[in-house]
Amino acid sequence: MKKILRFIVFAFLISATHSFAQTLVFEDNFTDNKNNWPQAKKTNSDIRLIPGREMYMIKYKLKETADACTSWIDIDLNENKNFRISALLYKEGGVKNYGYGLLWGGKEDNYYSFLVSPGGFYSIGKVVDGIWQDLTPDWVACDAVEQGRKGHNKLALSKIGDTYHFEINNQKVATMKLGPFFGNKIGFNVNNKQKIMVDWIKVEYL
Image (cartoon, rainbow, N blue to C red; front, side):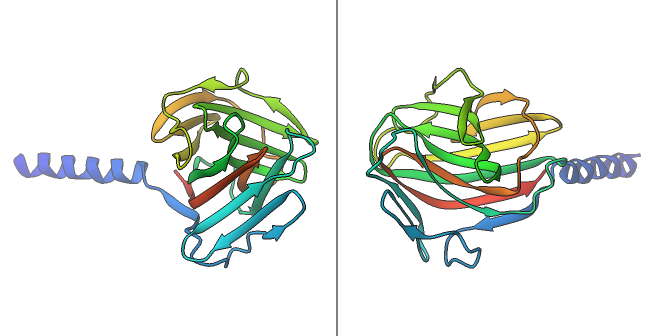
């Protein structure tokens, strides 16, 4: 009887492990640019990789403060599956009251975005034909955001069923339902006059 009970417990543990197993879809630690992230120095932005360290993005000399600097690549992610996108970013300098963060489901001037600001806020929204639309009530104050210069923030979004769960530094901050992807692009954006660094990004099926 004890042997049978041990077998049942062991089978349950194996089953539970498989239920929460994660399958890696994409990962980049920026040791090189094998994934062909766009790099360019323009009049009002500068995006570069430092091999073996990170990616940095600078936005400056803006005519419109709402303009965003984006860097993204195509990642083959099935939006009908459960998945998780996470990344570690930190601010290197610039203004305090504008955001930086993750974007996904993108195509041309359309994408979803999960941002934090150095002042201790977060925002979730989408850009449709180049126009930002809030999905949270504007900016939301949040103690989970590490503030100030050199503030490291791990951002993560998980889609489970038809619901998205958003985390900052391993603390859940929001839950909501979103529409379908616009496209397959995933990456980062930074607003106004800021310099940010990206340590890593990971995409997984849950």
